[in-house]
Image (cartoon, rainbow, N blue to C red; front, top):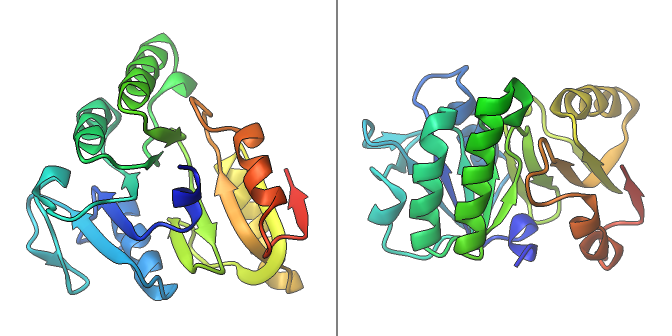
Length: 210
């Protein structure tokens, strides 16, 4: 199921935004600009289209199947989105949104609720509180990174989104490329040990950096 994190046939962005500068806009822009060849579903009940891609009011309004869900809505709304994603049989949910256990007990309770929903539906969860995920070979850029990494043979995993951004900036200056680039955030579910077997068998990866 976690293979859908790197090679999804379809991606939904819940919280896709019309305004440049917003995270939900940058993720959709990155996904389009990287050359992703699968189906893209921006979810925004107040927009008919963003960047010339048709929008949907909710995940349940999409008739086709969805492999990967990228969530960038306020933290209190994330459990409702997760329930909809579970009903759609989304395979992997990447929760960009912050406001979970990193802010204290109330956030930790919200994160436990989110994880329970994902487990009940058999859906894997990356995050919450992440930069996103990139696979330069698919190609897939489901992140809000301001610049895309170069293509290379290093898979990079980091808990810290800030470190991801710093390493990405440095790698572009040095001409170093990556096969996969994953921000793990709070690691409510998916962590390094879940991804290591996939990366170890990945023909595009020669080095795993964590």
